[in-house]
Image 1 (spheres, helix red, strand yellow):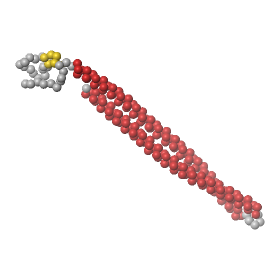
Image 2 (cartoon, rainbow, N blue to C red):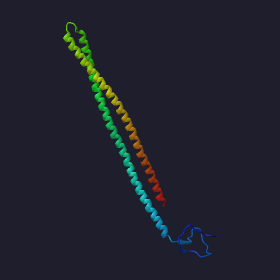
Image 3 (tube, helix red, strand yellow):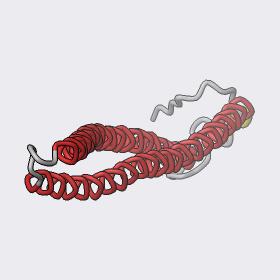
Image 4 (cartoon, rainbow, N blue to C red):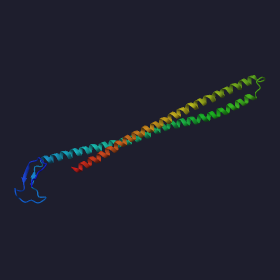
Length: 193
């Protein structure tokens, strides 16, 4: 029977002689393990270093996920505040517009009752009141239209911010998931050593 080994280490002790009977599991010889022990030690240190680095990366990735979530909350809260301010201003303008329209209607009704020929001065004064009311209504309608356009822009900005924030959270979560997988893989490799 021929016996071979894949080791290149030096044989330090031969436990059997040529022609001795051996059984399965008998130790035939002992090799110098200093070089192998040094390689194992080096690999264990590399594995520990990789595990420590992986844990640090996982901490950073976890922090990045938390930061991305906090950024989303902050950005959307700020944008929501802008939108709510516009709604409040718009509600005020709508109330003022409603009031101005009522005043315009009253002023026009009063103008109709004044005889233009006999009370020309009063008619002229009331016509100026009607014109002022009409101007106020036009101004408020213009402000309302501007605010409604601004509201649409801010709502679109909110949607964009939300998509960007969700994307940033997903990217951070993917990095965390990847670092967790690598950390698990590194731990399994270290156990195999």
